[in-house]
Image 1 (cartoon, rainbow, N blue to C red):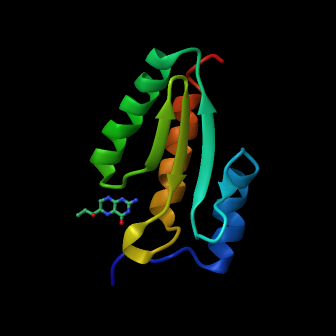
Image 2 (cartoon, rainbow, N blue to C red):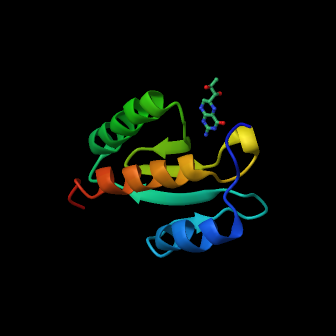
Length: 103
Ligand SMILES: C[C@H](O)[C@H](O)[C@H]1CNC2=NC(N)=NC(=O)C2=N1
């Protein structure tokens, strides 16, 4: 029994806070996304570096796009083809790291 998709109750309790904090559901996919903006590329890449190290530590990786000072992140769990607790955990971590950057 591998990782499970979030059930209805978990979506209400665990996803809602994220959706209230600028995460959005991806159209036509059980995934969440959020856009981040930084002072410059250096900060954007520093942010990505911290997320990357965490992703490798927890073995759960984002889908992301970066151009200069912008980073767009999409989270989903490939193993269950949808959102799992791992995505919730990583989203919270990402928001906590972002909060350390003054924008
Ligand atoms: C082999 C490796 O443990 C798996 O592929 C991990 C890696 N990182 C992952 N990241 C994400 N987002 N979903 C997964 O299912 C996943 N699985």
